[in-house]
Length: 548
Image 1 (cartoon, rainbow, N blue to C red):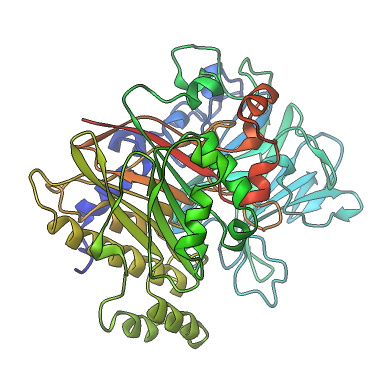
Image 2 (spheres, rainbow, N blue to C red; image 1 turned 90 degrees about the vertical axis):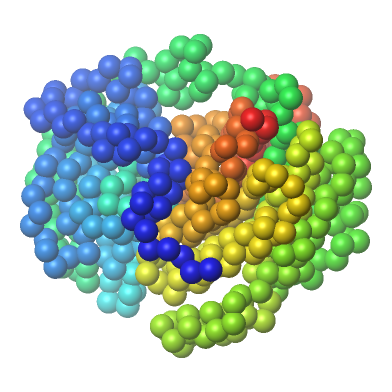
């Protein structure tokens, strides 16, 4: 089945991805001339790539369309703050990946009057935030990730991809507009300045050492905000003000699904710790991806027989046979999982890989050969919820790349291939109505939005679009499911749970990380704060589902 080039389907899928309405997508009422004083509602930014909370924000900079030949043509820059964070919403002018550009978008921040140095024609710069950091402009074809750099009268400090300032950029996939946060607290190692109450900011886009676009420099007064550091205002009606214990609790009558990228060999070496972390969220269904390719069913059986998981019940599982160097599995403790025959060994359509080879660089051909030989890392099984059978699928898509790259085109092909196999499986299912579908996995959404659109549309469920559940990280106002302080990229949303919204309703959904838990919660769950970081760079994504 070919992917339909329908603007309607693309728009519907984009709304499903973001979880917002069409009005939310366009909501942006600029207020030039604001003095920067914010009320609590304005400061409650959720860094998710949805801009509904920016409708009354300060328009800091309105840059004209003045870089027609550039990859980036900077436009509006909005700013908000609270006591802990500075938030930016930035129009890049083109659909791009903010952390994989041919050059760098550099935000120049004068954080404290009377200090700093001159950078790109702006004086008093104390801190640089580089999106799509280019370490060697003469050699690197593209930048990657982000970097922070302190500036003083002596010059530029060493670029550091430091997580200490809590930088998050959303969305991770291609867009024209991005939102981000930067901590105001500063850091000691590396030395990065604190962002004070008086702020000046400008931005440039640089390729190969040449400035292709430049904004004006604007001033902002970051006056005290009544919002709290975690972004909640104490309103008990706001679900984000609920305690972590409340959010961990499963609503009555729901089936809890947990998805995790278990990071290959890390899983092989640390099965006991993985079992403790997964058991802590008390799942009924587990969707595991990036299991090592040579894992045997006996080893997976031993995993589910470990004390933490065995205490939850007797587990049944399906291990996918395709994937080559990595595999996926679907498991349940609520009965038996019936293998989905059409998704047991997921192979590409004849000629699909060859077609991709014709447009891919020759250096990428060995990866495509491995892909054709091993097939797609996926697994699926039928699990009964109440009186209905639900098809659960786990998948891991290609990592790396940017919009239009060979990596992204392979990721699109993988998503379309899995969708087609799921269509065949659902078509073969006896009974009426059409059964619900749940897809979970690491979708590696770092290029275009098309892979997610391919999985959320085109399934035979009366034309409905699968819903990408809004899974909020327990400890912060982001949707990040991945973080790795040793990598150049900022934390982002790579892992998803997709559901049939006409059949399944999410009563609760969140991203679980031990570093987000208070000491009492860790003690209650018998976990260590650093456990999630030791297991995988991916976190556990959880959803509590109820049949409609």
